[in-house]
Image (cartoon, one colour):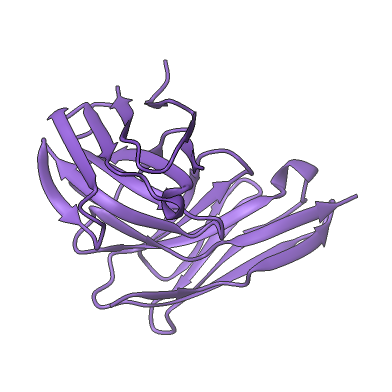
Length: 113
Length: 110
């Protein structure tokens, strides 16, 4: 009965590769997010989708491309991986109406070597 | 823009009380969240304040003063399992985007 699940949990890959992280939520939320948490534990939003529509796109290199096939799924594809992309990536979801809390997935620890 | 400040690290003793402060500057205010994050795990929701005053929830309480741009999280009867990072966050641009502080790493010692 996992609320927000993302896969894989760990991802080790070489520079220059392309990789994807998948996220799914079963909470019936209409908004999903990708956050990046760097080595200093600073959690920063990257993207947000509401009902499959991109509504937030922070200053993120265009090597990062989110895709939302439906409102329960939000995947993150990363092209030409760089060493600086190493971080923990969290998927989250929430309702869009009212100030409700966001629920986070368990995170994907990406290590680029 | 938004700016959130909270202490980087705190230590406390099991059974004691600790207060974690957060100051914020934001254009437009839509409330303030506190999240807990254990090492290697996801952030989990603790509290939400939108009105001034203290909200109590078991051992954890959260306070807000909108005029001062200030909030604190109060943890009572500390337990070892409370060792974690505590993240202060404010919504921006409507409710869809949370801006997080850098987090306060709390270490609880016996």
